[in-house]
Image 1: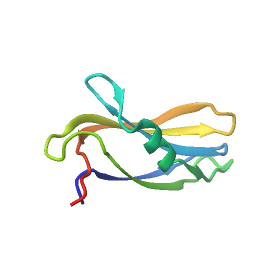
Image 2: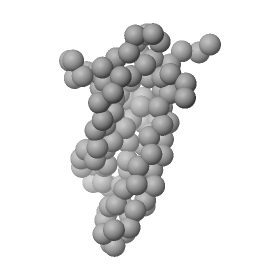
Image 3: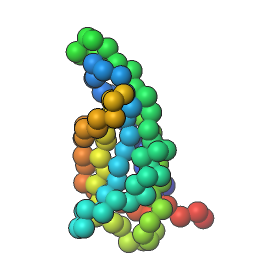
Length: 104
């Protein structure tokens, strides 16, 4: 995979309609990375069911534009769910080294 391009795949079970989106942070200062851009670009409506074990697939790809191609950022990728009333909750979080995307 190309440095700075990230693919997120999740199977999610929810019983109310809404959207899933991604937030990315730098860990040391807990500061957002491309926060509005990534959240908007990765926001997708997800299926829902009253059956508790039914899973719905979410996939999104995004680029990290901050930082240096050769110096990773100690970062965190968070997956969020927002219902139709605007209430958001975190679904998952993963710490990893994030690299900046750079056109060749």
